Image 1: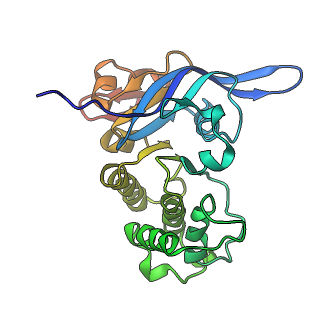
Image 2 (image 1 turned 90 degrees about the vertical axis):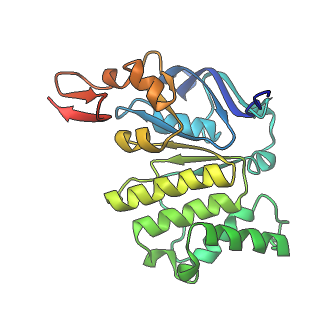
Length: 263
């Protein structure tokens, strides 16, 4: 029986990211290559300052790429009009939301902005999608609370619900588990895994939680400033890619326990 070919949602080739001015270009990360498929959870890891957030912002077109290509469903990301791209890619950044005085329901509803008219009028279908998103991230009991009354973990779930309401094929998240305790970190990562598998989304997140990423992610991109290896956690372990992440005189990676040890 023929094996069904996986659909490539997001494809990156020879990508360089960073910042440019009239005088010069500053490359933060270079030589980035990967293909992402529907239903996959992908982690981007690396040392501080290596370019994780810059990459996620570039994939979300918040800042322009320096060179290389980014294709979404076989089409250059630059060929999408902003309103069309907003229906394909949703982005959850670490910046504080503009108004925490909004209720959970109001903030989640903002995810329908790419689809509503200029008045922002919600249709019955929009309301149904909002209801489903709130239910999927288990926010029913909090839907009428104001966002400034929520814990960090609860607010992160609200932001994920807003991304779900946007109903995009790709969801990008920058450090979704920052400022959370270990229980809530695991809760968020398991939620993202469930969304990827059950709702068939391509979810990409940056993280410092490398050991957790090894356990939950389908694929991992390691930004190392050189080759930026990409693959399944087991492939990367076999290639000793994690052992090159940090100076070996400080910490070492143990492939038997999939964890880092202080040297």
